[in-house]
Image (cartoon, rainbow, N blue to C red):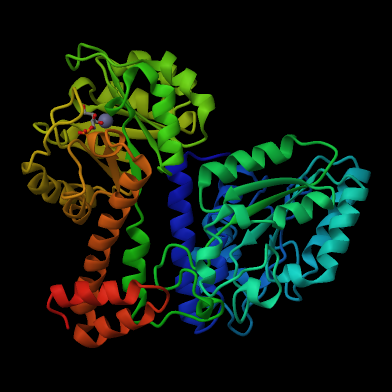
Amino acid sequence: MGLNYYQIKKNILRARKLVIKGTNAAGSGHPGGSFSMAEILGCLFNKHLKFDAKNPQWEDRDRLVLSKGHAAPGLFSNMAVAGYFPESEIETLRKFGSKLQGHPDLKCPGVEFCGGSLGTGLSYSVGIALAAKIDSKDHHVYTIIGDGESDEGQVWEAAMTASKYKVDNLTAFLDRNFIQQDSYTEKIMPLDEKLEGDDITEMWKDASRWKTGDKWRSFGWNVLEIDGHRVEQIDAAITKANATKGVPTIIISRTIKGKSLEHMEDNPQWHGKAPDSDIVPIINSELDSQFLIAPSIIAGDMSNLENEVKRCVTGRSDLIHLDVMDGQFVPTKTFDHNKIKELRPLTVLPFDTHLMINEPVKYVQNYIDAGSDIVTVHAEVTNESSFGEIHDLLKQHQVGVGFAINPDTELPEWSYKFLSTLDQLIVMSVVPGKSGQKYIEETHAKMTRLNSTLNEHNFSGCIEADGGVNIDNIGSVFADGARAFVGGGAIVGQQDVRSAIKDFRNAVLKSRRRMLLDKANQLGGSELVNKWIGLHVIGAKQEEIKKIAQESGYL
Ligand code: DX5
Ligand code: ZN
C-alpha cells in the first residue's frame, strides 16, 4: 500500500470529480467542505489508512471518523475510488434507499461513524481509540473535524479526555477552511485572533494570526500545522503523528473551502449547494487543469544548492526539479544522487529528478534511494527492455515514472505500451545541457501531435514542459496541454523566487480562465459564458474573467 505522489494526486482528482457528479445528480449536498478536505482524505486512503475494501469489517483496520459528516460526498468519493463500491453508485447520493446519504451512515459498509450531529465525532473517536488500547490492538483512529463544529463544547471535552488518557493512537485533522454554514467562522465564533477590518478572506493568509494551535496545545495535544492542500505536508504530518507517543496529535490543516474551483474557493455559498448540470463540464475541465510549478535549481548558485532548495521552499514551489547531467549524455556535468541525498532532509517538497545521463537503467536505484519522488529518464538512452525495467523498479518503490523526449525526438513506438501507466512526460523545449536557453517554437506544433498520440494510448499522467519556459510563453504552453512547468532562468535565476513563481501561476491562471470561457462559449454561447462569469463572486475574479471574455469577443 502507498502510492506515489502523482498517483495520489490522480486519485484525489478522481474523487473530486465524483463529488461533483454526486452532488449534481442529487441536486444538493456539500461540495465546499468535501473539497477542503480532499487532499487529507486522499493521503489517508491512498497511503496511510489500513483497510480492506473487500472486507470493510476487518478487525485490524484503522478507523476513519468523519465528524464533519455533511462532507459525506468527499468520504463516499474516496471510498468509491478505493473500491468499496462502484464509482457509478455515487449518482445515488441522497436518493431514497441509497446507502449513500447526505451524512455518513453505518448502512454503508466501511463507514465507521454516523456523522450528522456535528461536534460529536471526536468524543466517539476517543472512545474507540481507548478501547483499542485496552484490547492491545495497534490500529489507528483518524478523525476529521471542521472548524465550524469546533464551536461545540463537546469538542473541547473530548480534547481534555484524550489528553488525560494519553490517547496517542488518535490523530485528528482540523479542516481549517474558515467557513461554516452561513458565514466565516471568525464572524460567528472566532477560533483565531480577533479580526479587525473587513477583508476577512485576507486574514487566513497571514500565518501570524493563526492561534487555534495554541488552544489545542494548552489542552495537552501535540499540534502540527500544515497547508492542508499539500500532499507532501499531509503525508509527513501523518508520519510524524504516528511516531508521537504519549499524547494525541491534531494536524491543523489550513484549507480553502471549494479548493480547485475558482468560483467555489473561499465562497460560503458553496457550503451546501450543488453545481448545475450545464456547469459540470466546465468544472471538470477546471479540475483537469490543476498545475504544478517546478523550479530547476541548476539555474542558481551551483556551489550552494542547499540555498537554492531553500529559496524554492520559501518561494512556495510545488516540486523541486533536479537536473542531473553526467557530461556524456549532455556535455555538462551537474550533480548526482549523492547531492540529492544531501538535499533530501531540507524539505518535504517532492523531488522531480530529471536524469540526463547515459544508461539510466544502471543508476536508477541510486536515485530511488536518494529520495526522489519522480524519476524521469530519456527516450534517447532507453529501449523497450531497459525502460521496462526502470518502469517496474520505480513503480515497485512508489516513485513516479517519468519519460523525456528531446526537441528532435518523437515518442518512440515501443513506448506506447507504457503510456497508460506513465506518471510524467517531459517534453524538452530546449536541447538539454544548460539552463537559460530560448524556448524552441516548434514545440507548440509538436505538442499538438503528441496530444493525439497520448489520448489514443490513454495517457493520464502529467506533461511537464522543460526548457525556456517564461512568463511570456507559459500561457500558451499551458494551452498546449502542459500541466507542470519547469522554470530555471525565469524562476531560480531571478532575485525574488517567490514573486517569480507567483507570476508563473497568475499567467497560467489567465490562460486557464480563457480556456474555460472558450468551453462555456462552445457549450452554451454567451448565455453560459455569462452564467459562468456570474458564479465568480469572491474578490476581484469576476472583473478579471469578464475582461478576458471581452478580449475573446464573448461579451
Ligand atoms: C535543460 C534542463 C532544464 C533547464 C531549465 O537542460 O533540463 O531543466 O535547466 O532551465 P530554463 O528554464 O532556464 O531553460
Ligand atoms: Zn530538466
